[in-house]
Length: 195
Ligand code: SF4
Image 1 (cartoon, rainbow, N blue to C red):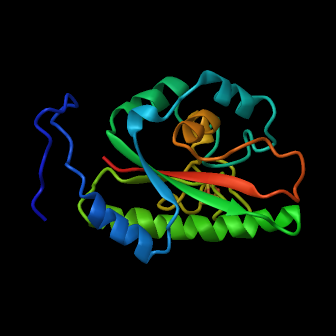
Image 2: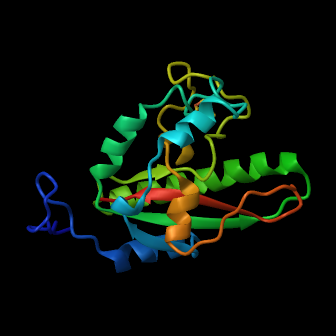
Image 3: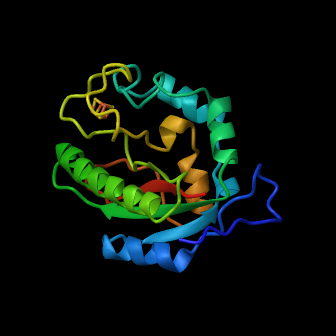
């Protein structure tokens, strides 16, 4: 692949000019049809998201890809600032029982990893997927990054990296709201950082 870099870009060294048509062919071949391109600068990172992880989430301190096993909020901001473009993938799902969310999330995450790899192989060396959920690849999480049994595949969800998913996806025109009942349809979002 001939690599074209943006000369006007202020990012150090410029960034790859993204062939969206080519990547969209990959998305659709892997059956990801509900997505939206955004500028990486549209991803909102907020301190309150980390505070909600620390005080209010039962996964805090128990998962290998969740706080406190992840970089600081400032490091997360710096990470997102190194990208120009991202893709939001939307998943709408209603489950019969709350526990059905876990195997569904696991299967979607495995498919998202395939997608990340294909985008990487297409020449986008910075491609990184943020799952639509906490990492649930294993039935029982090892609990820390050091003990993670699948370090190559484990990925954080956007909330773990302090992304304000509510504001970000609403800004892109997608629906999201707090659900007060498991019987209602969920709207979940994965983020692919591209370049
Ligand atoms: S890959 Fe498994 S052990 Fe590692 S963070 Fe994910 S669920 Fe936990």
